[in-house]
Length: 308
Ligand SMILES: [Fe+2]
Image (cartoon, rainbow, N blue to C red; front, side, top):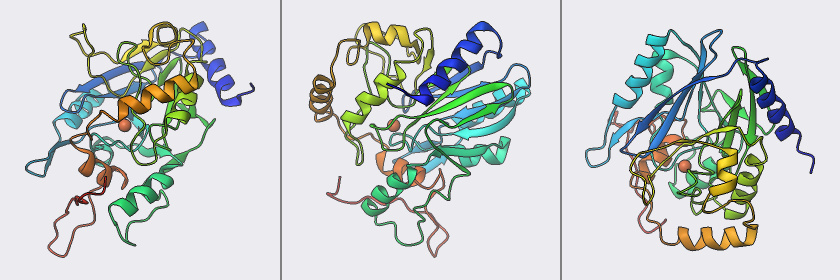
């Protein structure tokens, strides 16, 4: 099968492995409250950087945001002397709020997400009856990525892959020889992302994962979440294509699409909605901004009753 984007990513990974492109430096920040791994990746030559999937802390009971997790990223960026070019989102998350706008104010960076965010905005705009003032055209973001797009962070080559299934808009960012795969695949002992949110679908998820697993076996995969797993007491967010192909409990080599869809559908039926789904989706579909304040100057998060 000819897949130009995968070929471009593969060539880029090989160039990095050979040493003709610099190797990306990655620092991960793990938020235990939402099981989210945020990554800061930078070019060791130019110190230009991208922040991937940042977390805004949110106390749901009090309806209060805070910035401890995001401040840790600011501190790291300042300590390392990095210039942030991008705030990247692998997708509109349903389990944590994005800190991208707050981080943009502190350390800069253009906000980028997949072009199919427009589909996600349409689905959730309806579910939350967001009204005509909520633009469903992706205009809350600085850039909308499409499959196969390439760019650079300093001297690091980047190839963007569209990997739908968990949501319609999921993107993976292959930066040098590291792939930031968002919610597609998790650690081998935990398996894969759920595909039952509105707009999710296990069939494209399987194809997206197999596409990622067609990258060179040595490719490092940086994950967006970890939940530990039976017999494992430490959080983990880094694995390789080779390890996933050999050991992933849901999608190791040999598992077929129908078998996966049946497993994923049955498992998803047992999962509760994420604790922060309501605030996360309403904020993240707006590029991490709170809903427009009402007449009293306060932003409100809605809960559609008996809708999800
Ligand atoms: Fe997600």
